Amino acid sequence: MPTPTVTAQQTPRALRFVFFALLAAAASGCAASGRGAEAVATNAAGDPLVSTFSIAAVDPATGEMGVAVQSKFPNVRSVVPWAEGGVGAVATQSFARLDYGRKGLELMRLGATAPEALAILLREDPAPESRQVGIVDAQGNAASWTGAQAFEWRGGLVGQSGGGAAPAGPGVVVTGAGYTAQGNILVSEATVRAMADTFESAEGTLAGRLLAALVAGGAAGGDKRGEQSAALLVVRPGAGYDGDDRTVDISVYDHPTPLAELARLYALNDLYFTDSDPADMVPVTPEIARELQTIWAARGFYDGPVDGEVDAQFQQLLADYMGWENYDLRIDEVTSVDLAAGETLRIDREVLRDIREVFSEGRYR
Image (cartoon, rainbow, N blue to C red; front, side, top):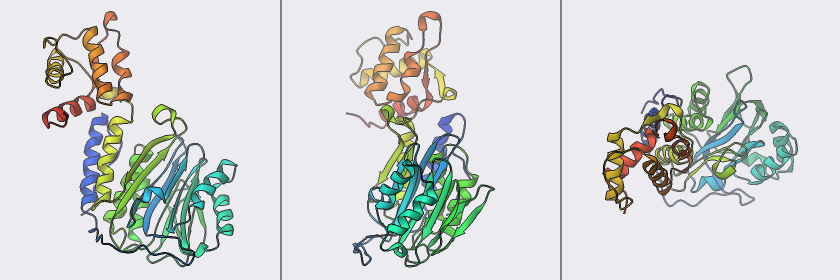
């Protein structure tokens, strides 16, 4: 299936659900999974083969860093992607060695650049020719390594400060800026090229660009053995729920079409774990108020009149209902309205749509 030309940045943000739907459709058209009960291969040191394509990237403008990955290996989130806010991000794959994630972040936390950290880790590795690693730091530096013993097709592309990407073939550390895309046991080089091209041309949040790049890689061929799991991890210091660094942390453990599932879950993450966009706030008219009161009454949340009156009591009920339904990060825009001063109560159109869909589809008890 051809990869759609889409961007993650659309206004109002409700239109971004169209973007996620297109991503899911593209992902559903990727190579057949070919999932069987195969034994996981290991190298001489006993490290598991994680046949994978991934992209690690940093957005110096926002401070976000992250990794998107898909693999013919279950629960890839537990192995490949590593990231720490204000420090860096690492993708460790092929015959994966977790120290590239753990120690890589530690080295960058202590001041090493991404290329410096990778050089140290390779020197300490008893089997570097089995590995594949992509690493970025908070300053925008990037580096990639593919060992000669990684299975073909293997290699990557590393973004460059002047634009474009440098090829990262086996046996050589390649450095650059912004991002590094890599893969092993791929159908062809087209997978990493599609990831790099899509990431460079996409707009919007880092998470949206990473996801678009990963889907494009799958549509270009992906892992020659098929699909099984996927993950998306993005961090920024203190920007996640309750001050956590993780703004996006999604894992598809085992699925026939993990990229499509990852896109679906990312849309949910956008709804429940991001703040409202002011452009998406719409006035609560008497008609909308009556509709909400009807839904609340049917769900046993409300036993008052269905009169469409938008007053302080309605405002509190709306805030409480949003908390009940886990729209926690979008409540402030409701509670901060001063009705007594003549301000208009507004609701996020994404929240309103989800409330309607949950009710009409009976997705509640």
